[in-house]
Amino acid sequence: MTNEMNGDTTAGSKRWPLIVGAMVIVAALVGALLLVTGGDDDSDSAATTAANSTDVATTSVETTEAPTTVSPTTEAPTTTEVPATEPPTTDPADATRQAIWPWVDSPTRFADPVEAATSFATDYLGFTDPVVGDFQAGDSRSGEIEVKAAAVGPMTVVFVRQLTADDSWWVLGAAGENLTIDEPAQGAIVESPLAISGTASAFEGTVDVELRADANGEPIYQGFVTGSGGPEPGPFSDTIEFTSPGSGGGALVLISRSPEDDSVVEASALRIFFG
Image 1 (cartoon, rainbow, N blue to C red):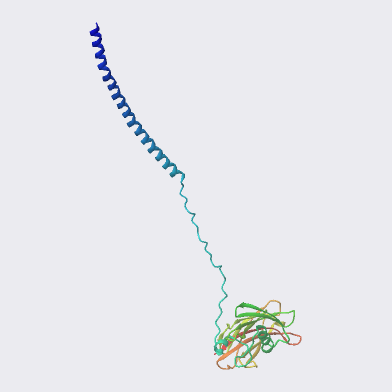
Image 2 (tube, rainbow, N blue to C red):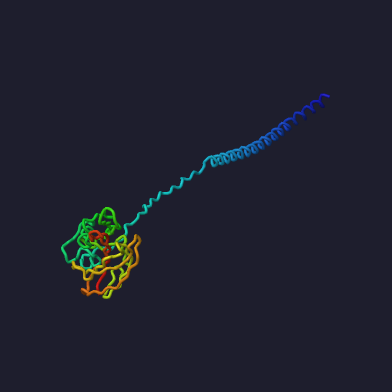
């Protein structure tokens, strides 16, 4: 009995180290597996965390573009240009060809347009102490001035312009309120016989007609035409004969006179040239 028990005890003693060794090996394998698995999980977790952090950083950082600015464009205001006029010339003979007054051969010149119109009305047309209005500019070098025989009555408009480089004022013509010249045309070259026509309103319809040449105080023709004796102008026409003064300029003048003292009430003057 004792030998059997000792044998069993010896066999058992020999099996325990084997069992313990096997358990140690198994534990080591399990631990290794856990380490491997745990390391992968930690690595994956760290990678995931880093990726998530990157996503969060990417998401939280917004790209802000600088606003586009447009430089204001300042355009010059539209201006209106001054109406063009014929440039003055230094040749008086050419510049003053279109002017009736003053005569180019005389020393008379006018620095003021109203003075030019007043002289024309009194010295050329024959008004007595006329009422002369203010200068009304048409452009930078020309305009018109109203002239009346009295404070109340028909109006004569005198046209003035600066024609020469010295800026002196010249008279181009005149238009009576009730005296219109249709024929000849402004600046026409005329010969005898000369057909004239237009409309007029005057006392008893009678209007004086004069043909004048430059630098000649006396008319080279005097006559009359008959228009309307009423308030509305009526037509007139006539053919006049005259002795030509030769080439040069002049004027066709219509004059309406007062029945009381024969003074000039109204007048028209048209620039012409003799052929």
